[in-house]
Image (cartoon, rainbow, N blue to C red):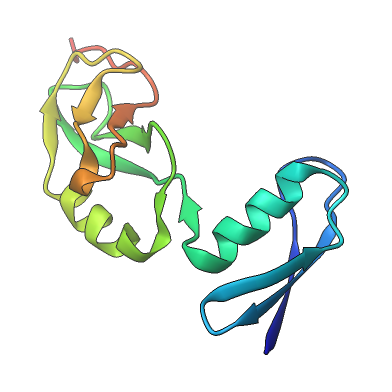
Length: 122
């Protein structure tokens, strides 16, 4: 049996959560003060997910790159592959905040969206 200790990041309390596992199976979760802590710990131990933030090239914009973010968390184990897809993209100005740059990134259900607007250069 293995034991993992995590700090929950779902709320400001920051509970220290202990997860006991037998192989890939979670036996128990303790130390959380709310249900969110247990859900976080289970997800983090089985298949962690993160929001991806990056930039893409933009042609004709007021800057050379456009900041982007995923619309939801994606599995951490596909993060490098996701970044490869993001690096391939180039968009043309103007772009509005929230515009979808890549739809359904790697089949995760998450879109890559512009996290700011960018006008065309004068």
